[in-house]
Amino acid sequence: MSTSAEQHAIVTINSVSKAYQRGNQPIPVLEGISFDIVRGEFLALMGPSGSGKSTLLNLIAGIDTVDSGSIVVDGVDIATLNESDLARWRAAHVGFIFQFYNLIPVLTAYENVELPLLLTTLSRRERREHVEAALEVVSLSDRMEHYPSQLSGGQQQRVAIARAIVTDPTILVADEPTGDLDRVSAEEILGLMARLNAERGKTIIMVTHDPRAAEKAHIIRHLEKGLLNDVSP
Picture 1: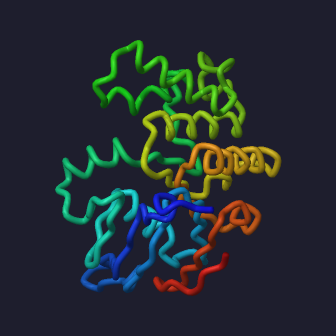
Picture 2 (picture 1 turned 180 degrees about the vertical axis):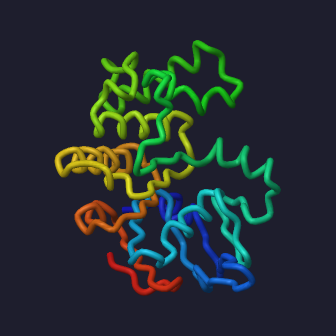
């Protein structure tokens, strides 16, 4: 039986709207979006190109800001934070997984994973403990001194996941995390994300266009033309 803590909404999205300017013309991207994300949920956001799913992900992650409405993450209304406070909030609470890994090529796997920890007060020894633990979770302890160019696409994405979880963030956000991978590597990454969710209770919000990837999620939410279309269990 689920406990009340497990059912607590870690993210509350309330009447969120967002538009971008094209010259003098506002282009609506999201219009009055409202829903909750429960702690420990694995959510997939799907929709056609231009539906607003990546914009919504960026708003939840604090990369972009809402025009109206609110987004509350673990009790913090991030729409009220100024730019510097929002940057500190992102560093502490959000782990990012990108389609193209975003690893720094001149840094080793270890050094890439360590990067978010350089913003903390952890000692070098404590940082090493965290990095080694994160690389062990993604089964890359034997590759920590390798550079991205020495790793396969799937291995690079696992390094990126280790970097995303090394700070033990409140939420993991993934934007097309398997979009640049072959099917076998994609299945490995999706399996890893599912284990992080099931075994470590990580709340994951994933944008994907791939129905096979979305099948790993608990809930699929569909966006179309900036509107929440339906919810599938």
